Length: 166
Image 1 (spheres, rainbow, N blue to C red):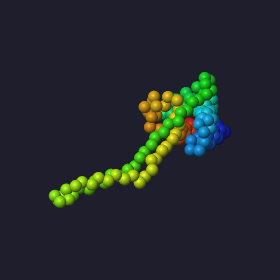
Image 2: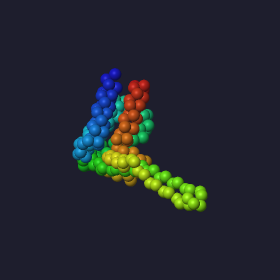
Image 3: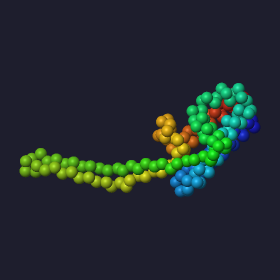
Image 4: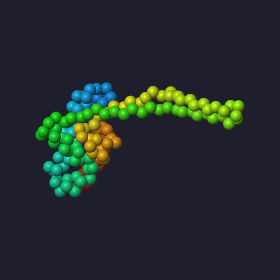
């Protein structure tokens, strides 16, 4: 069917932009990430819009299953109709260390030895979030790339389910 192949093509386009987001997050600039994210928003929205235009009844029966639809649709609408989408850099750092405590039981050796070691370097991770993401508790523990990947999985299922209904 043409509609399904068109939807899958737009989904592949969204996956391409997600890959660009991943690359630019690790070795690119914030601007490159934001441009890829803007393109991701447009292409992923097209998938469900094609379904809506093709068969509204099937679209309406499936669209509520997309947990992340509202956030990505709202970001896309803001980007298209109001102002360019904004992302922010966020980060976290983990430090791994080892503490060894040795105690001696005899009176002659009544001393306590405490030794701290850290053989590991801090682990620094930088990632992007959308503006206002941390204001929403359900999105605080995910990066923007994590959310986009989850939404792609939902949209893939949407396409398969839509194909069964038409």
